[in-house]
Image 1 (tube, rainbow, N blue to C red):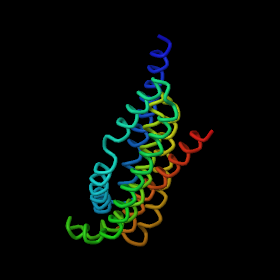
Image 2: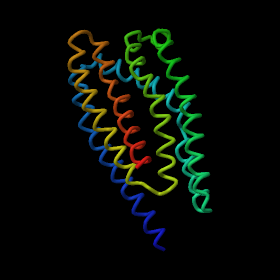
Image 3: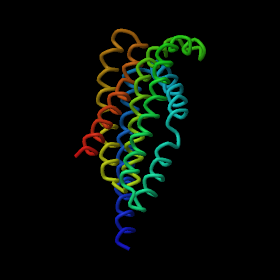
Length: 208
């Protein structure tokens, strides 16, 4: 009964963190649209369409899968195997994420031409590193979810979103003064930085 109550409390914390992140995003998008303008925001959206496809290929379903395996091992008292699951999944996801990130960087301009929006190429290049970082981040979040440590995941989600918004809006504001394409790319920089900060936080909590 106590374990069920703790689990419910963890998921409640996670739900609240997700809600807070969504509310922050509601204010973020109109400001970014105002900075970039209609055409600039259109370029920004094209960048994210490519990013979301690459993200789905590398990360979709990995976190719950890791969480399920870790939870089963932990329930049977096999804590060392649960930690080994984290290490193996982190290594594999880092490898796949790293390959996809490098490919996105190398193929950014061909992809931009393929989607008939060459100006989106800069944003794709800026988003490429986030595939690697989010892959590693998924392994840690999966592990913490498996051991029902939802507070760490919740804090990392809010932290990621706040850093993402602050960095993206700042970079977009300054870079759009050079060109619209650069401004749109600047609006994507926060994705990688936010994910990196969240990942470093999860690593810190894990080692602590």
